[in-house]
Image 1: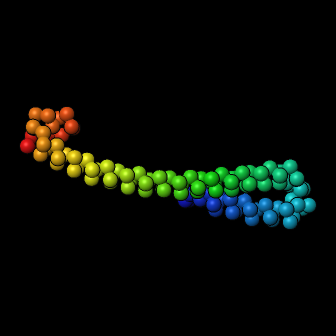
Image 2: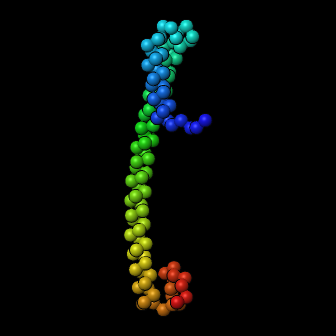
Length: 104
């Protein structure tokens, strides 16, 4: 059996709560009392809020990753230019000082 998403679990609990509330008298015979319903409703609400927070964090992570990718690309291009200029200007013996391991 496959994994059920958080959203599906939260939605299934919402439906269950609605059914339990509409048949509270009948279900109380089986131990589904006000305390049980209150606890389930609290778990539902907290889970929904945490899921919303998690989705917001995922969005921020994607935004941050895109910004990092862009900045890394810019850095690589500038480092490449600097590398070429160092090779043109500096003697081979000093290239190691710039992190250049090439021999020619």
